[in-house]
Amino acid sequence: MEEACAVFGLYHGEIDWLSFSTKLYQDGHSVGFIGCNQQGWYTRPRQYGVNRVAGCAKDVIALLGVRAAVAA
Image (tube, helix red, strand yellow):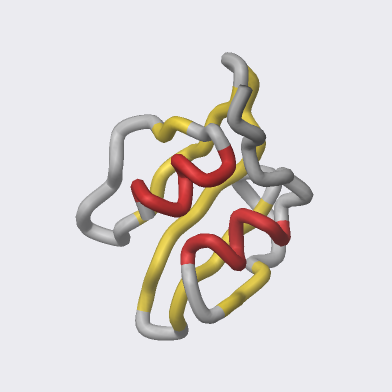
């Protein structure tokens, strides 16, 4: 997850290790939630809502509409 966040220039809040989920931020603004459970990696733009599922952390972050960070 940390490697995937770095690709997008994101940082995360405190990780809930019980459900392995956290809130993602970019430039001080919340972009959504990411987590992993028995169904795989999931994301959603708000705390409550429908989870979108993908095979890896990088793919679910992309589902939030976040673009990969470009090196300056």
